[in-house]
Amino acid sequence: MAIDSMVAGVRAPDLEADDGLTRDTPGRATPGRATPGRAKLGTDTAELQRLDAAHYLHPFTDHGALRDQGARVMVRGDGIYLWDSEGHRIIDGMSGLWCVNVGYGRASIVDAAARQMTALPFYNSFFNTTNVPAVRLAARLAALAPEHFRHVFFTSSGSEANDTAVRMAWRYWQLMGQPQRQAIISRRNAYHGSTIAGASLGGMAGMHAQGALPIPGIHHIEQPHFVELGRGMSEAEFGLKAARWLEEKILELGPEHVAAFIGEPVQGAGGVIIPPRTYWPEIQRICDRYGILLISDEVICGFGRLGAWFGCELMGMRPDLIPFAKGVTSGYVPLGGVLVSDRVADALVEKGGDFNHGFTYSGHPVACAAALENLRILVEEGVIDKVAQETGPYLKAAFGALASHPLVGHAESLGMAAGLNLVRRKGATVHDCEPFARELGVGMLCRGHMFDNGVIMRAVGDRMIVAPPLVITCAEIDEMVGRIRACLDLTLSDVQRRGWLG
Ligand code: PMP
Image 1 (cartoon, rainbow, N blue to C red):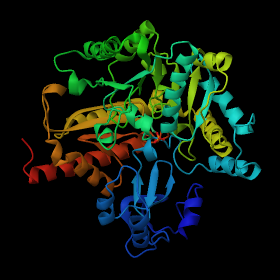
Image 2 (image 1 turned 60 degrees about the horizontal axis):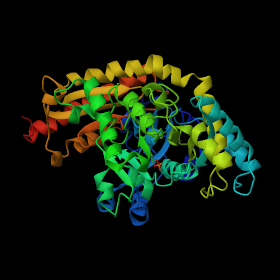
Image 3 (image 1 turned 45 degrees about the vertical axis):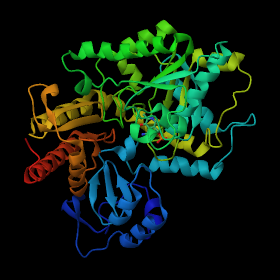
Image 4 (image 1 turned 90 degrees about the vertical axis):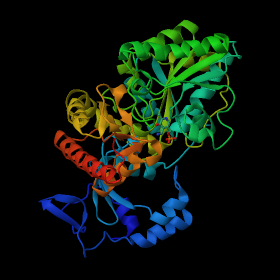
């Protein structure tokens, strides 16, 4: 089979097909191992790797190192599993990139996109025109969002969504007669995208260092990371303290200059940092007190990741803008946007005149058609309720039990997002654990074992994180966590052999 037809053949794969995979039980492929000497899914891995190294600059990648190592070529997916061009079956513990919420191989999403492509592959929404899926999706999102949201602005990515939120916040304050309100406050170790505004909003020093970022007017406070910053406090006390860093920053800048505060309900790329319960209600109180807009970046947390449609609903906040992307289409087609609360939408619609902002692909009909079908699946299969009531608690118990491993200082999860800290020496509390020296790269070592043994887990320094598709079953969680434990053992042997343990 040629690679194009395989990539196009997203239909749930026939596991009985002659696809070069070893099976341990009927219909089940053996993870992490190809059958020697059998067909390799029709792809020439070496040739693809050569072309990849010669022509393809990957995102967030050391291009030289990748050229030497060769990229892993992914060719198909089904449910929570991926297959690479060598026939290895891998549990996708990261849902692609936090997005394939309904899992791979959903033929009905493919069909919805194909039908729309046939009818009308594209038309813009600029010249007082619209299209059927965009209208229907806007109405659908308004019905799913918290009650005070009735409008949506579409983009194609999370970064564009955050750029849009910033431009909207500035425009809102102009329309309210307070154009000097331009400062946006964000947090260290936040991730809000890779465009210039997105990278500026993010609190990633490594991104800021590669250009003149952040752009003026964007300010950062510390993150609500209890393990890193909460020594000597209860979680509840720390949550209040972390929220009050916002108040201090507002007072430092002058409330009359502050437009908005932006945060992810749970920081994703920063390492699945779950804030104390006291944090977001206090942030809300502070935003209300000074009248500043609250932006809940739900690019990861939206569409069920935490066991609710939107993370803000769980966290006890009432945002004014909700940037989203990823899970709205489960990543099948790029789509993002901003849910706009009545507070902001009323200003834009009633007082606004032209809002000079938008993208060619805002409201792309194919992306919106895919999103509608994805949302139908989430609703009709009760996917999010299942995460809230069954699989989320199951993951919490199974993943939390990894804390007994000698390398793990702390393990936690919320919904379908989980993280654990690899430590050199365990302590009586999370604050007494001794970390590894960062430059040893223990997290990357561990990630390598995971990948080689059939599970994708991401390393953020020495914090290992997973965020599997929301459709993962309890049995699959057992398989994933079992694999993670085995790879923690391999990592432990490595660090012992290298003499890195205390
Ligand atoms: N916001 C958050 C919270 C994200 O996690 C991401 C991507 N991981 C983005 C924004 C940017 O989204 P995109 O990569 O689609 O631009």
